[in-house]
Image (cartoon, rainbow, N blue to C red; front, side):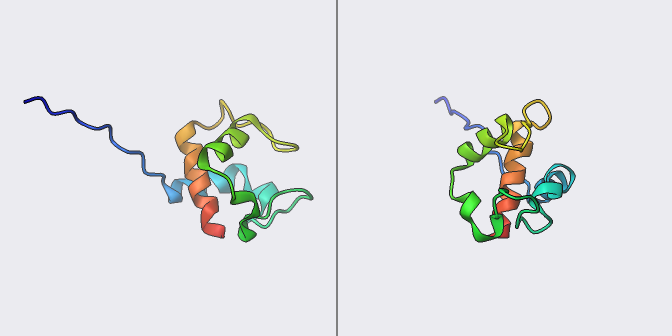
Length: 90
């Protein structure tokens, strides 16, 4: 009998997401995710979070409006950590 092992599921790290958020995101999105710059999503109301993780990951990787692209700066797991962290604001 051959047993197939499933790959280990990635569990996002909220604590790492907070650290990354504080380094790269807080200046524009604010400490509580309310948005410090005009046009920045207010994560505390959930409006900017009503998207799938994949959609948010793609926006962060490629940049959007005034937000720079983070592809090559953060890997996908780090971006998913940030997404998990910002979802705690709502």
